[in-house]
Image (cartoon, rainbow, N blue to C red; front, side):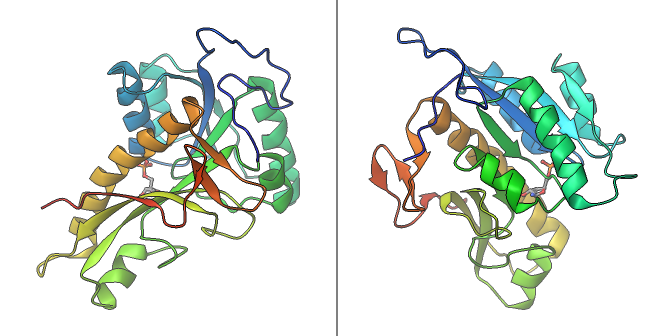
Length: 237
Ligand code: GRF
């Protein structure tokens, strides 16, 4: 099992603190609004998440999430993808940047880039993503439009471990959202996003508490039990 220890560095070199754990260092990767980043900041401030957001990295300099990070006095880095000759070259630079901040966990929070298998492998078991659908349904983009077109009665969001296949890693926690008859993609997306803000801090908290890990068998383990199904958070009424 890939153990995730609060405070572990990328090379596993950070000292393990036996009493009074070192807070987990979290890197948050964004490309846009950063409302999920804000949910992590808010959870931390409210005492619901004992973790340190060590750095916020964006591939876009105009991402509003950078402003949220600055207001919270979190270090920010912009690593634009423009000018890199290849995805591999960009991800190598991103890997080096992450290493400099030595997070124990990398969270993708609306980071609109497909990662190379090399980068994912490097962060195996220590990288989470949040996706706006009830995976395995609707991987990829335009999830709300697709759920509406299919006439889904229930839609939602999923936090999962990142594996090389896009939106395919073991699911950890889902929030279900009923689809209303008068929903359009925008309204549905807004209600799903509200639920995302509940489940992402929860999953990061489980990691920070040492309760959640990715097993060598490819399953997510919560409290040493394999998750045959993701934990499902109650649907809103
Ligand atoms: C969220 O819907 C998330 O599920 C998806 O990208 C969006 C990011 O929103 N991966 P925000 O930037 O956190 O507001």
